Amino acid sequence: MGDCEPYRHGEETNGDNREELALDRTEMAEDRTVMAVERTFAGWIRTAFGAIAIGLGFRALFGELDPPWLARVIATIFIGLSAVLAIVAERRACHALKRMHGHAIDSPDAPHLRWIAWSVCAGSVALAISLWMMESAPDVASEAADIASSAASAID
Image (cartoon, rainbow, N blue to C red; front, top):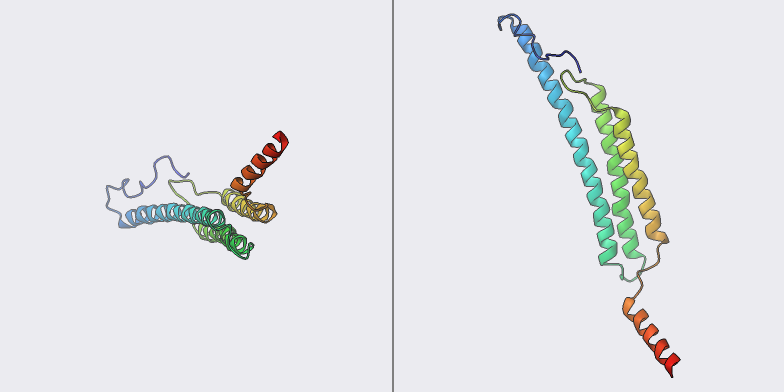
């Protein structure tokens, strides 16, 4: 953070100096832009989480598609999209923040943005791998019928 009292250039001369007032407005605008970049990054990360949810939801709802791998492929596409969204959001945010600096606010650190984006990316990859390693959801009704029939044959 800059001064203890930011945006005070124009106040020192009772507002007579237009250049100092313009400097205040420019600094305020740059601070607003830094915060807008931060909000945009957060929005893209939320979109990445939404893509993960769509992928998992598709797999859960349509897991019994024929051929059986089709639901996994579609879910993997959405989960992969989430990884791409997170990395692209990080790159764009870091590129934009490199060109500006905060005056009365602290700019987000690029390593923190990278950490968030790569965590989402790593989680997406781990989720996609586990999706393909996981067996199909067991048919609870048929398992219950098998247990009941084996219990009935044990009694006889």
